[in-house]
Structures are given as C-alpha cells and as structure tokens.
Image 1 (cartoon, rainbow, N blue to C red):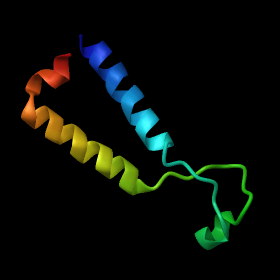
Image 2: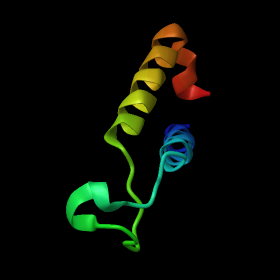
Image 3: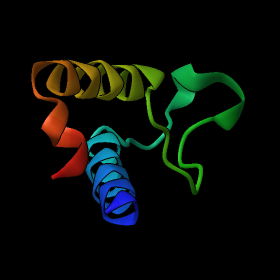
Length: 65
C-alpha cells in the first residue's frame, strides 16, 4: 500500500511539474537561450505540495487510496 501511494504521488507530481517545463531564454542568465535543458519553476512544486496537503487534510484516506 505504501509503495503504491508513493508511486501514484510521485507520478502525479511529475505530471503536474512537467506541465510547467519550459525552455530557458535569455532572461534566465547563464543558461541563455536554446540550451538543451528545460526549467521548472519552484512555484509549481510549492503549489502542488499545498494542494496535496489540503487534500489530505480534507480526507486522510487520500493517503491510502
């Protein structure tokens, strides 16, 4: 059960966070434009985590479903 919860949680986080992925541009300093990477804003993780906490507070069973 714990493993399934961890896998589902991480899959959800991955999908949510990567939906915010973007290629760096010149405004991002040293990365420059056209770098072969993508960046994720920290706010995406923060928003996901706050949402997760609200869901668990509303319904603790979320953690074992």
